[in-house]
Image (cartoon, rainbow over all chains, first blue to last red; front, side, top):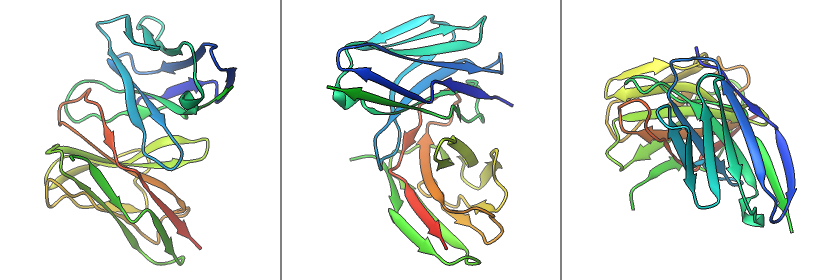
Length: 113
Length: 113
């Protein structure tokens, strides 16, 4: 089955810096890669996702890149703000019906002002 | 407002007792999921259901049971056979086709002593 590895487990940056979180996946048939943000005591919320027919996707300060050959995808947050502090999860799945998302172990991002 | 409701937010039980966690959604989603979250372990899939009266085991189904009698509801029972039941439990839903974003509830923190 699918296995998703996520690094780093913790990341501390200064406000205004960029943050990068990296994930690798094992199943070459996976083709859907979402990123979730989880604030304390709440459920994860989708922040951006990418499918295998696209190499990069941007939404304001957030971008995701995908390298299908290397089975690697990354989340980039630019101009970080204190409210970006949270736990971030990557995930992967196939797009056929009946499959479920498999998640990485998460990255705790701390943005200090 | 459409969403997923998990209740209660906190649940306490004595060892040896079965306990059922509630999950209700009004998003008209066909698929529902249960994940378990432990510190440093990410989200691990317990069970999922793509349609009423059908469900599949995830990676850590041992000691858990589910039912899906209604589209809106997917309760999870943590049985006394689950060796380490204390955890944060997250319910999610999505449209049934693979590669769809998950919508999460705000979780139930179960403590078994």
